[in-house]
Length: 109
Image 1 (cartoon, one colour):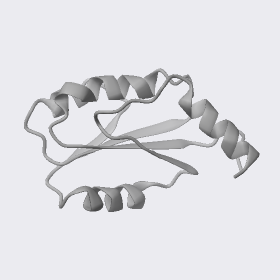
Image 2 (cartoon, rainbow, N blue to C red; image 1 turned 90 degrees about the vertical axis):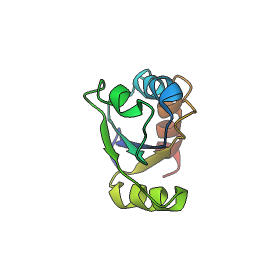
Image 3 (cartoon, rainbow, N blue to C red; image 1 turned 60 degrees about the vertical axis):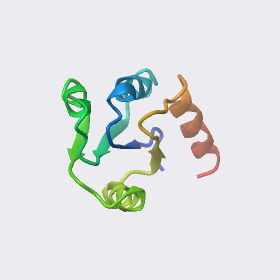
Image 4 (cartoon, one colour; image 1 turned 120 degrees about the horizontal axis):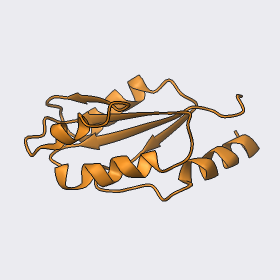
């Protein structure tokens, strides 16, 4: 196990333009540098994609899917990191959440 494992954050989204900026900013305020952030969008038509394009570090894909189970399966296939975090597009992480998860993971992998 590495000292600072990479955290893989996946956010499924469909027409969540009202919330996606706040959700994305909650990832950025973590103060934990070793992460990868991906949004799997179900083909939003509400401006979500225009918001995602503003965050150059962010990986996002958009297209139709077959619901939450399909998005979950896409997520798990893409996850190559030690720690996988799932966050709905209308939720957010509290500041310091990644450090708490990593601290616990180091104690009990």
